[in-house]
Length: 237
Image 1 (cartoon, rainbow, N blue to C red):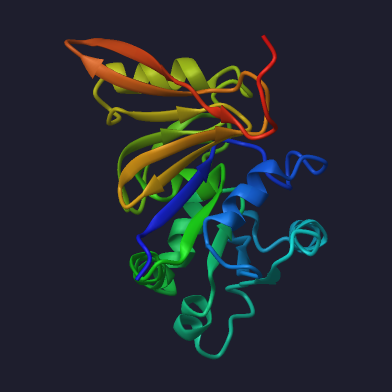
Image 2 (image 1 turned 90 degrees about the vertical axis):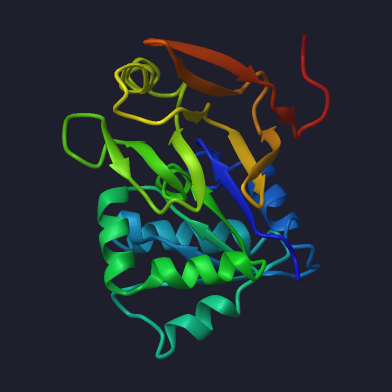
């Protein structure tokens, strides 16, 4: 049986970088399959048709078998459908709504089972923070807040660390105040690749993008850079 894997993207992928498939190719590669089945879950975006169409347009070019899961039009056997996938890719949007719907449909439990059985899980933004104990979210209008999440992975997560100016100070403030667990932040274009619950790799689709360990120590915050391997080749100096 394959080890559990999660590829959590701070930003990027087909929805943010339509002409740069580096992260999406990396995600698919972790299945170890020549033509993997990959399911897009657009719950956080309200199952927006346009988002799903963009997924199919992008992934149909990547040598896989794409499908999608709508909780507004679910399959007859939800668990069997999910467990048949080699990979599950969760889109961005409102994480609070995503978690509520997943729990109502018990999809959170099904995904945990799939993860333990070797299905590669991952996604971007909401599809990144949902796997951690806590995430920094903009699910509530007009502000960033701390959101309890699924807890497959320990600690907290912050996406868009360099892409949205308010993210970095808010994440550090919540951790410093003890309102949020220490954790990992990722710039846009960076993916945190966990094997089991251990961060095994950090990769990027953009030059000079990075991840960061943000920890609380004695009422202060420490930010430690985690170098990301650029998937496009050698970095420019």
